[in-house]
Length: 569
Image (cartoon, rainbow, N blue to C red; front, side, top):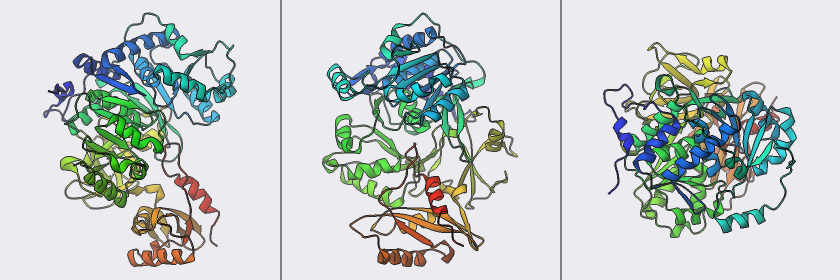
């Protein structure tokens, strides 16, 4: 018999949120689970398993090591790591002593790493070994005093660790005589006694983690996420996905430098009392073996992950009866892909339907989800418990009625504290409405129907204007992708002297279709049948791949810069 999740006790119908947020840190939240089920597995990493009791001991020891390195309350430690135990343990260890984790993508350029380190004044850095040459090139341009060098092999089983060491025998160039560098194993040995820090303030509103995104205006932002944000999200997940229990498994494929990855695949997993299966680098060729080995109860991923699932070699022979939830987020889920995944799951003994969620780093992770009673195909469902959504006239705080398109705004317990050292951007993004509540202006176009279901449209900045008419790229993309020989379509604006902007379609073909004039004419004819004349693409280009951002989303800005070269006079 499964034990009752302790977080259900925080459900409170009399609270404005529908639940109470415990006055504890992220570490304190984890401790609730550890005390309730100390001997169940918290994470698994290449076959190495760690119970919640063992995880707490590791965190306490590593927090003492960080204290020995001079880290104290309020300090910001930069972490440049993939999904490994060392990274997860460090985030909670730093939280235990009141420090803040500033988490970066390991593939960031060295200038980006330097700028991020300097912007938050980090003196301590935890980084994966593959980043060491980049770190060596910029370390003297920073205030770094300690660089902890970890490898993905640190927590692997003995034989695998040796094989990994042979595979990565190349020397990651840095001066090993420089005393600022220390290996993870040597770092952990330098612990000293340190007391746990308990956050203060209403609902622990202090910063726990700094994440990064382009913000609502497309320029880099340092997003401050609080203990309360993480813990509220954990309870929202527990109360939404009620049949997840201890010993269930979540595949942590989404990276921890992303709110979706850290929020869902790690912190929420711990709130469930589940086992987070840490995957440091996703390889589509290994997808089938990963699924067969771990039999995860929950899959969380971007649409491209589910596309990879359908194409994975040998996946047709897998029985998916073990799956409880499959959630897609991080990018728009094409209806055709949703249906294909649902058909696949149904044919492989699963009652699960692919749920589309909506989130943004400024709201930590998921803010709405199409699941259970809130499931409706083609929508992003309804807001999670305690979260509110409204639609306003773009550029204002005027709320629009049901069914009308406008900017999507969010109010709730997971909305960020703000952008660090950027009061202007914070003020334009977090705005007080007539109801007195603070609302996050997402920069996304959406509508809310009479039933309360949210229909996502597109980023406002992706909307283009052709001869005075609003043209929505996602609408064009959806129509083009209806053709059975089209794999993917992305539409961006091209400057036009008279019409201001016209649409250009980048198209990936499939089923052996050739990208020639005949195919172009076929697509254009179909668009003319389905779209208003001003929305029909003006230009077409057939490509084999589309550029991606560091977060594995379509790089619209790069395509837009390329298309600008084709400005029409």
